[in-house]
Amino acid sequence: SLSDLDVKDQVVIVRADLNVPMSEGRVTDNTRIQSVTPTLLALSKSGAKILVVSHFGRPKGKVVPEMSLKPLTSPLSEVLGRPVQFVPDCIGAPVGDMCSKMLAGDIVLLENVRFHAGEEKNDPAFAKALAEHADIYVSDAFSCAHRAHASTEGIARILPSAAGLAMEAELKALEKALGNPVRPVAAVVGGAKISTKLDVLN
Image (tube, rainbow, N blue to C red):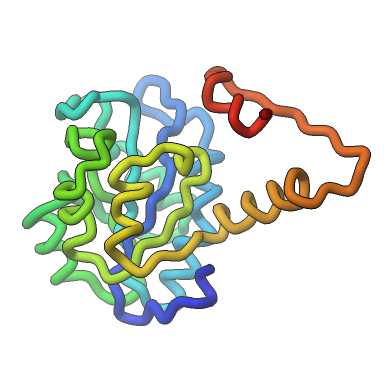
């Protein structure tokens, strides 16, 4: 968990799920932004330099301008109550250049990881490139954790890793409901893609 980490002056890459619904360039539901906020603020308060990485839509390994995360910089900044900078890639020199300028507590949003084909293929070389400028990995995207992608699974094999606060809360809730439930127990499962829910239901 975050409490196990010493993040002061460390570059922490946080996998968030910022795949939020949007209409005409505006976020229509910021629940997922709010979900990752406690983790980002806790890391910032502890003196970490934070890189936020996420996917948006399904660009299938190509740069699709309409699926850029740049428009989320302002909504993320508003919810956090502090400025958030943007890097137009999630790997390479642009990220390294930003890291060299960051101060303790700074929060930076990286470009859509799915602009790179290596993300969904869980390509080890891409996972290594994601990890290159970071010291620690924090997973706080529970809704993406069932996918073995470079930013959810591959990077965790490279960097010291921990669950974010939202991830930790979800795991505790699952354990309470499924691992050792007080019976009778009921679950309400929602979502458009039932295929991703079947394993949990089984």
